[in-house]
Image (cartoon, rainbow, N blue to C red; front, side, top):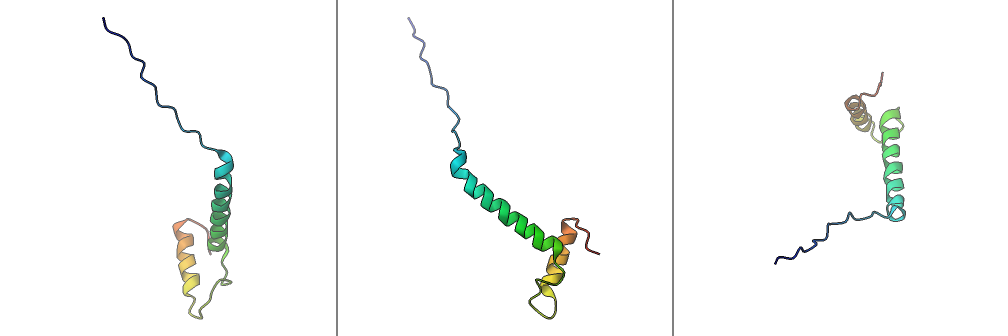
Length: 69
């Protein structure tokens, strides 16, 4: 006679929200800050007289389809 052996099914790992929440908030705040500086720079972030930072952010606006003119 053969016997049926129950093979345990894998259980999904539960993700504790309380441990992930601070990191999710931090990433969200950093992403929003980056989005703010890229989308609203009016030479306020320019550190050099030649405007390299402005031009870099200006190109970033074009890549993300922000209106800039």
